[in-house]
Image: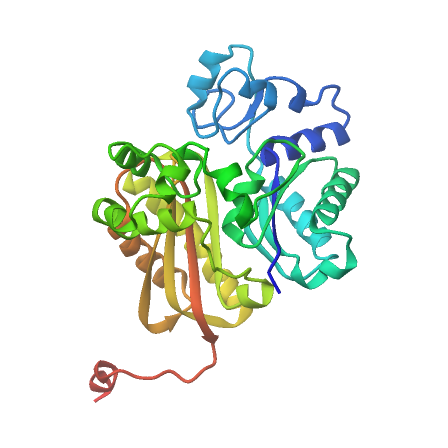
Length: 366
C-alpha cells in the first residue's frame, strides 16, 4: 500500500496565534487584516521579522529580515513582540486535536507536523476530503488557519503545503512533480539555501526541473553530498518515515527561534546553556541518560545544519550537555547569522543502568 502523508503548517503561526488571543481578550482589530509583524523589540525596533500578515507581505516584507528594514518598507507597520509561552500552548492544543485522528504524528516545530494518513484512509472518502475536514475543523475550533500538503512522502507533502496560502489544501504526488514542482525557481526547493542556489546558477541551473535533470555526479563535484540530496529532492525522492511519538521518545531535545539573529559565539553559548539546562532537566525527569548529543543551527537564510557526537559515557547533567554542545557548535558554525539553535539527545538509556567503566576509570581506582 502506498503511504499517504499530510504536512500540516499553521499560516503565519506567531501572528495568527497572537491575533486570536487578542480577539479573545476583546481587541477591536484583527492584526491579520492590517500590515503587521511579530518580532524584535517594539521600543528599539531591533531583531528580525518572525511572522507577517498578508497585508504586510504586499509591502515586500519577508520573514527573517531585520525589523528596521520592514519598518522602512511600511512606516505604519504594526509590530507585536513574540510570546513563546503562548505559542507553545496553542501548539499543544493543535497537536492534541490532531491526535484525535491518529497517533502517527511527527511534530517538527511549534507550528508544523507530519501526519501519516495511511492507517486511517479507509475512514474517509479521499485524502483530500480528510484534509479539508481537518483544516476546516481547526478553524472552527481555534480560529486560525492551516495549509495541508498531501503526498506519498514527507518531502513532497511539505513542498505541497508551501504552495499558495493561506487556508489551502494541495497535493503533490510523484506523477504531479513535472507540472507542479519542476517549473518552480530553485530557491523554492526544500533545503536549497542561498549559497547552494548561487552555486547552481553558475552551472546555469535555475529551476527545480533543471536540477532534477542534471547529472547528480556533477552536483556532487560542486556541492558534495548536499548536491546529491538536492538532486534527490528535485526528483521527489525521500524515504524518511513519519517519526511518531513512540519513536520520538527515543530522544529528548529542545530548540528556540531567536528574537533576533545571533552573530557571535558568546551570544550563542548563552542560548546553548539555557537549552542544555532544559534538556538536562527533561532527561532527569524522565529517568534517562543520553549517549549521543546533537546541535542544530538554522541560519537567517533558513538553511538548517546539524552535527552530532557519540559520548564515551551516558550523561544527564546540564554541564556535560552544554560542554558537548559548545564543541559541536564550534565545529559546525560558519559565522552566518543564526535564527534558531537546538540541542537534541538520543541513544537514551535508563539512568539506573549499570555503567561500563573504561580502562582509565579502573586505573584511577587503583
